[in-house]
Image (tube, rainbow, N blue to C red; front, side, top):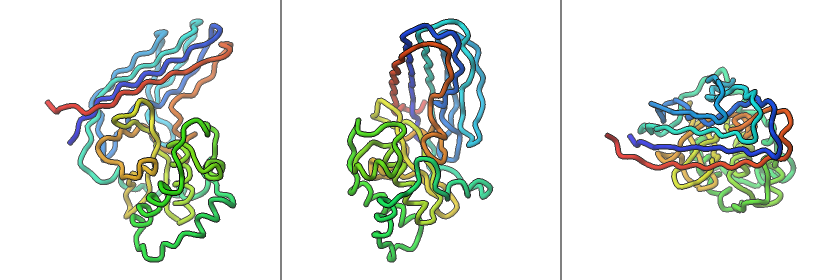
Length: 264
């Protein structure tokens, strides 16, 4: 077992005072077969009451309403996550598998990805796991990591035609291709040791368990990853969503620290 400590801070600044703000934030690690969360501390500024719950995908969320005028909103979560020695995330639940088989949202293929899919020869690969591994290697080779050329609204097809993008784009493209192969796949948002921001990867259904693949780094998801949430695409597990009155232009700064800790 590996113990990871995480420190996640989100700061939003507004040009003008916000009169009221409803918020939903998904930055709490999930509990599953690979990770256990013994404790998490939450602080919000300005101070306000909040509730904890889960969305329809089982992702943990913090939600509430700030009614006092404010020009800053800060959420800070700190905690530890025990990474257990399993090679999968969780066992499959057949009732929900179907939603991860079909094209959806930002993971809908067009001529570019359909052409790439049809050009792939996987006849010698017998299992879903082998296909997932080989496709991850090929995508890592055929797509380039470049920051700043895509945005949160970029689809898999748009990123593919650009030929470059960031972890969200790798994940969306990989999911789109896996679903074309008939393999259920879901988008994952989380944290990783050594990166100062959130990260995205993919889970695919192999032998009735969900296994994590990181096409950005061309590797399996092992003990230096913390999973926050999953969904059909990035929109289903977006970390921050809200509705506010006034405020004008706003800026957002996120800082993330994830490090290994010695077990006591």
